[in-house]
Image (tube, rainbow, N blue to C red; front, side, top):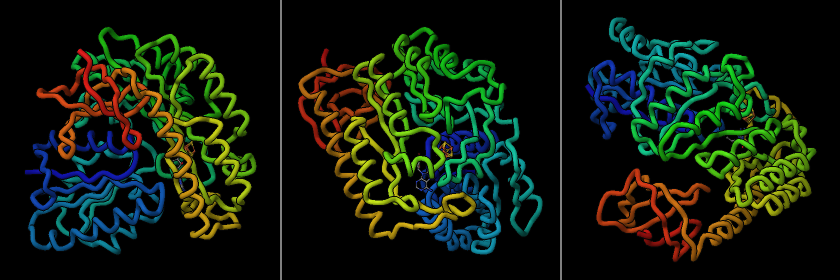
Length: 438
Ligand code: 5AD
Ligand code: SF4
């Protein structure tokens, strides 16, 4: 029996798919890369923006024929979109051939749901819970991204930014126990993983429920204290909880990468307030200044939304000027997408699509210009990269440096998992190219 998993969305989902794989493997399934040859197909969905949903809907719909042709094929849909209010019913209505629907809180139940479906005959098995089952600790993920490994530290979000559906589909913040997190990090380092990324919707509010046992800077510092050479990353941080202590921990632990992903969302105080972000542009820039005083050259990346309800040309220009001032290494840019059930979806002042599209084009042009400039700083120098893959098309190995820049080089032997010094002699786009120093 073989499984195929289709993943949409963020790193959280990528890692949860590794756990889904772990559950399927424990049930005796093997991975199958061709979707048409699998006996069970699992969609791990995302609902952060409308196009993520449309994508999933389209691809699930496309399986109707396969399902008819292949007796015994199971199709399961899980993750954020499945958890979303009313979506399970819609899935059932549109795609009666879907066998199993599960949500964000009960991935660990998947094995039982498969059994129930097998025993139960016709009709879909649907299980959606309002709160997370505490049974994920036992799942051994099948990790697919060596030398990188993801480790969850907290789940859910209490912030209710007005545009965002995450608090509705991921529930309230819950922290894993620090000892569980640290024992996982320690094992991964001993197993030879070279880059560990601590994951949470909002890592800075780790332990907000008291279940962790220590705050985020303390956890991060301990996670950086295992013997051996490895890198530590974390995402995502919320600017309102960014602290001087976190800067100090980043500074004094060389295993923690000099890279901070700090979503700004907008450069306009008026829009930030409508978004319920609970910081101002000035406060955001102060955070960056504090960080760069502690760690000169620390790369900062961000997320930005254009076309939030009532956003004027002036508000948008504030976002452009924030990009200029903040000197982001790169930024992920999004057109605002109304999500049913969120406060912003009820707001007046919808921005026409063509205006949002025009704004995002201007924003992307500026972001790219900055990103290329950030890359150019590495030209002519050496930078340490962790080799993580081989690019078939380019015929080159690739890795990333601490600041997250992709670096490419030729090698006649497999270098994946090695730390190497790249002599950067060419930049293309934002990527670095060069030779490996001996
Ligand atoms: N529309 C557009 N972008 C959104 N994001 C979250 N919700 C929305 C939405 N409704 C963006 C934010 C967040 C990133 C993960 O996705 O920028 O930081
Ligand atoms: Fe969404 Fe805001 Fe929570 Fe991030 S902090 S997941 S943007 S509600």
